[in-house]
Length: 161
Image (cartoon, rainbow, N blue to C red):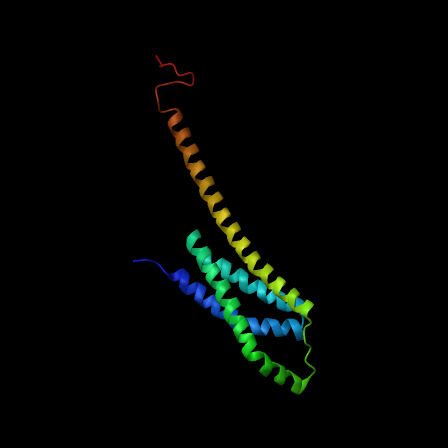
């Protein structure tokens, strides 16, 4: 039976990202740009760390699913909720609309956050591979040292007499 827990993780984080997307966008427009970018970065890093517990192919498929779900449904949620959020914010204060340039900047920041999550996942798998290689080399060195004096052949390859 196949282990599809990576798909469950991708769905969970994708839905979290999709629900957070409108909040991050409106936070970028009306509260604080850096706080919104940090929130997007944190979501991407958490998804990357959680998905890196699976095998590399599963993790990257899961991360791609997370990106597609959170971007697709997040953009849809933003389109559906935007007018309601604007109406709610205009009741208590002034709503600040983003210019086209600011919107492009937001999209680029979020894309950089998604890319940084993938890079972090690559780094995690690189560290895992390096740790495994160091452990394997240590075992080989231990075996060589243990067997160095057990044979009847000396260091020069001659039989001992």
